[in-house]
Amino acid sequence: MTQEAVERRQNGDTEGQIYLKALPLRGVEDIEKIKDDVSKNTIVIVRVTPLAERNVEELRKAVEELYRHVEKKGGDIARLGEERIVVTPPAVKIWRGLY
Amino acid sequence: MTQEAVERRQNGDTEGQIYLKALPLRGVEDIEKIKDDVSKNTIVIVRVTPLAERNVEELRKAVEELYRHVEKKGGDIARLGEERIVVTPPAVKIWRGLY
Image 1 (tube, rainbow over the protein chains, first blue to last red):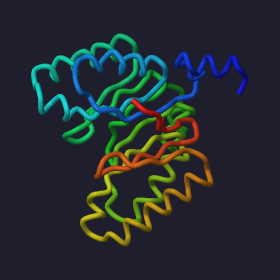
Image 2 (cartoon, helix red, strand yellow):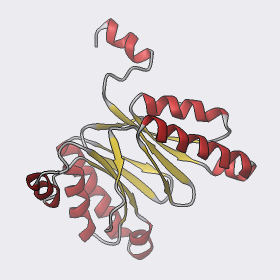
Image 3 (spheres, rainbow over the protein chains, first blue to last red):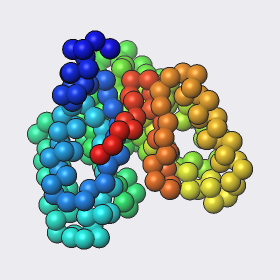
């Protein structure tokens, strides 16, 4: 990797590569990080239980905030079981067909 | 959408669009479907508990088969909590950094 590429990577620029990342949601302060990741072409699988166990109202607000972000920026969001939600950048659509 | 596009879609060709799909693993017979989805640029989040509860040895073989597939074709695979694994096509890398 060139020095320039190393610097770009350090700055969080993944050069079009799509990443998938799993993160816990501990508080509303994690929401900005998740929105930032999604803006950088990263799919984020968010485990909501840490915040759900601590403050349900705060969780509700955090999830609403993510829905608004996805609506505005494109991308998609869906529940994954009881403990997680998935947030995708515009390049990735969540398939809701039958199986 | 043109008639041709409709036919391509019916044939499972998603024309470069990346999809994300959540599926349960009920038996080894589901493995071919998952491999096929990944080959068509779909990220598959596989809930392994249905097979895990029924036959652990069959689950071990199924997961090995998916690892081999990903090794051969590119893409990535990782556990997601106790109940799921994520399988990605070559276009999507699983991020294993710290957070």
